[in-house]
Length: 254
Image (tube, rainbow, N blue to C red; front, top):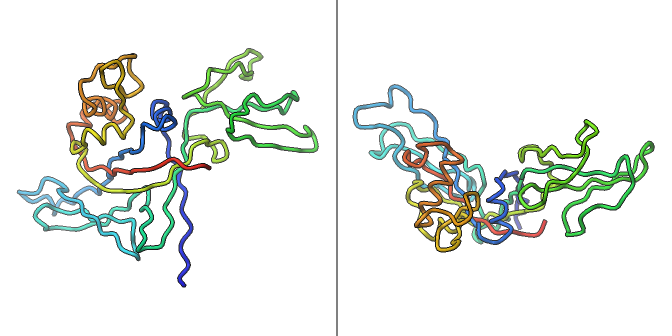
């Protein structure tokens, strides 16, 4: 019997509103712009303005690629690697890939003063025992859900220096996600249901992405997602209507 490949793990950083939506069970999708190669000068013929279609080319041998090409099927065709991997499929007998969430954080430790960890809610804790300091521990605080702790920041004053999500180490992550589906589509093809799966929720009769003034100001989930997408990707990113990876996931225990 052919051995199956172990699931791959990749980090994925999320902003605070998305982290909270995942923890609350509202967010089960995310979208990333497909990075297509630039067209070469010889490819820019009169009736070709850019890449016009993307098709799935999954196979047992290569189950992470999508094909990008011209609408009229002329010119160069490229395989575009999916950054999030392909989910399990019974015909492949292959485990699903996983993502571990990076988020804004800081680390508290007892290296200089012995005391008990501040949290017993199941979040990660890393123990040490060295010759100079003896036993001590490290435990993360999460900006998305925790109050700002009063930790020494190196100046003798209480405070905290929150660190960017991209610097979070694997051991400090509290959220693991299993990919259940990957597809490609135009950004503006998002449905109302998929906008809700992106973490958009109804609050006091208005649609809210979790980061705006309480109460929200959007009439539909798609409008709220449009505003959220532009806040991350910049003005005009929605109007550009790029191809995007649509990654569906479910939360699993680390």
